[in-house]
Length: 325
Image (cartoon, rainbow, N blue to C red):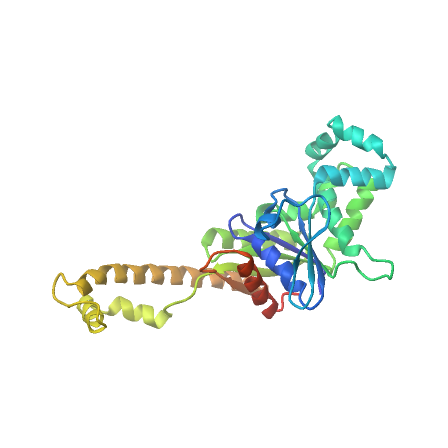
């Protein structure tokens, strides 16, 4: 069972929402989950309808059964100050470096170091134990960068290899990679049943596998309900307009005479059915592509009422029912 669950996905697929729902699902039945944000967008705060998250672990939700969800927005500069204090005991000197802009300079010119700091903070939370020797968090869920950057972001050991051959940065990267490439970690990719997100998901899985990073599940988000099945769609395409008009009339929607109310409804209804058929064919094709990736596949529905806290808990129940742990 993976204790670090990394959630990535193409922009617009709802990966932050899925990460939040996953954190709630994993916290069910008294578990404690930490939801980590690394992009500085404050997306977690928006999803949970709360104020902006500080650089500290804060409880933001209670899951069914008494579980708790904590959240942390990791700031690379502050994480570097923590790192400098941990290894070099700089104290006020570290704060002075920040005022001089040295911290921002270091995290900007060396993006590999920045990623070590961000992933390192999450991995530290995975390994952290209390005084009794129990893990502080049962699960850590990371709302990670998009699919196009996820492999490079997680493969921090390669990124810093040319920057630090030895020393604390090198050792930290090695420690991070031991967690990220272990069974403790699973990288999930969020997608939609659309060509571009599905292709990016396939490419992302190939890159993760090539880097020997553990692929978890593909989570298809915002799946629209299937109103008509394939057989019904074929029937709709074959039914004459006049038959549709008569059926509408018999249902009490106006006379079937030329120009009547039922007659005026025929073209919009057939156009909607055609659009539905095209979408059905596209989604069937893209679902087959995802199935060929040979990873577990989960689907989350499009919420007609829109996304709010109630919707987030509904998605968490769906994930829990699919045993995403």
